[in-house]
Amino acid sequence: MIRPDVRRVLDGTPIAHLATVSADGSPHSVPLWVGTHGDRIVFLTGPDTRKARNLRRDPRLTLSIAPADNPFEPVVIRGRVVEWLDGDAAWQIIDGLAQKYIGAPYSRELDRVVAVVEPGRQTVGIA
Image (tube, rainbow, N blue to C red; front, side, top):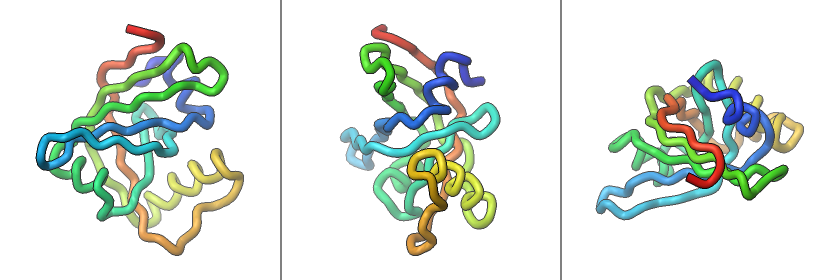
């Protein structure tokens, strides 16, 4: 379940930083668009990106977000990818994220999938 104060941030247009674990155990972090889908968190990626490969091997992740309206009250979410969506189901979510962030559908020039995240620990503010 996504906490209401966390959902408020996710429903805006924050840039989240996704941290995953690489095969050699080193951290990998990238910025990305993020949103909600029911009680889960979603983001898009290429099916063969490092983040996708890392998460298929080890689904644990951390999202770190500094909301634009209050960057001194960061949101940190630990969770795990519980599902991967592709095809029409993915494109519906991808277009929703693109509409939210850039006001237009996402380009179909690149192959994309959606990671569906079950949120675990959710922290707001410095902890």
